Image 1 (cartoon, rainbow, N blue to C red):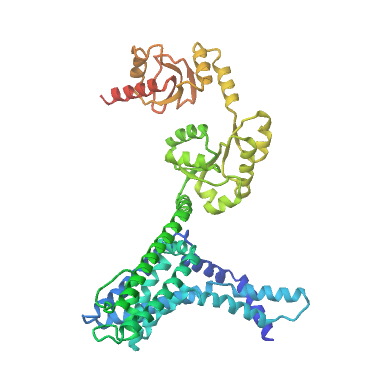
Image 2 (cartoon, one colour; image 1 turned 90 degrees about the vertical axis):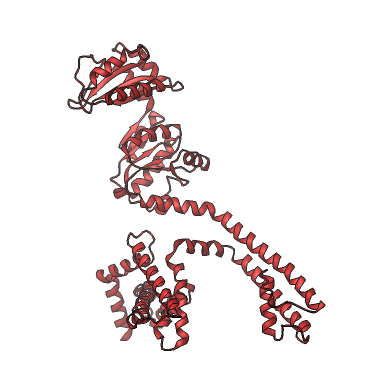
Length: 519
């Protein structure tokens, strides 16, 4: 009968939305590093820790008001106790454990074993209770029993709670944990050396009238201070045998310090790339809006240069580590992961609808672009996808992969050539478009009203005459493109001139145009 009620309660809790939402909310607040309000909670808890330690230090030589003592001993302790109980609650899902056990027994035509489910629940909760951070949490609550003077010192354990709220400290622990075997070996070696030297120095020095090592505790203190090369000098061996022991332990101490240093350095060296990668992923997850560019190539660099006008950050996904390094030298936010893998986007924790303005696929292979598009379409149906097309026969495949805009540079050049073939400047345009290896560029120059006269006057400047071609002017208001514009046309705010020239010449023209405008 009890088992039936337990199963009913488990199903009720499992399907109760307010209960599940509350649990998810507290999980995000306490454990989810990407939850926007977690940092405020962490700041609040760190503030309580500082305040509690300050009250303890001040109480050593000053009187603390009754209200502050109540706040420190009861209010802060109750907050820490509440946090501990919530962490205990969210650590595992008891209702799911009961339901899984019930359905498992039902499938095998067995009677529901509440004892087995209880054992599983207890095992999960014990994992939390016995974890180092949970032990620190419970010790930090001990000052609640401040009437027992011994428990007051437990307020110092609240300082250790910094490890829970400071990400850098958690990272340091994880780095050192990767060298657990080496560290344990070193600790065992140091303990053996301390134990042996303590016994030896005690045997050699304890009966000498001038020696300060009178007890085994004195010998242990001397050994610890010596092996870690501190050497206060308050206790020194006076016998020849004792000094021999001292020389032995000093050499061992140097070895211990050297090995410990090398372990820490090697651990950081091995993890430094991983740490950098984590920081990049965190930076991406914090971006509000950005362009996602898959693939890095010379074309990518050109596209990024154009997109800079939109004033939106860009994230480059590239599997090739050499290209990633090259992109980072250009100051780009480049991530070394495969754009065709779902795992990549799970790591990035990207919300495509909210964060990604558009995805631009610029891999040097149509197949790779198709795989990347299919992967992204698995995650979102609404984000705009643009892709470069290398081989015209793959256009349909790219389209079926969900890419809205497909661009083939060769087709574009042909289209432009067809449009301008009847214009007097056609030869220059076609030559410029085909000259990928030259420094000739096709550039946009944004104009405003009143610039018409200066714009056309500059074209007759000896520096630009017959070296600087104006393909046409795009009229913003009428949305028309005028080839070979007449100097008589009226330039209005928002009009754009399309020019063809050497890059240096275009930059100089733009500078002179704006310099005259300021006058």
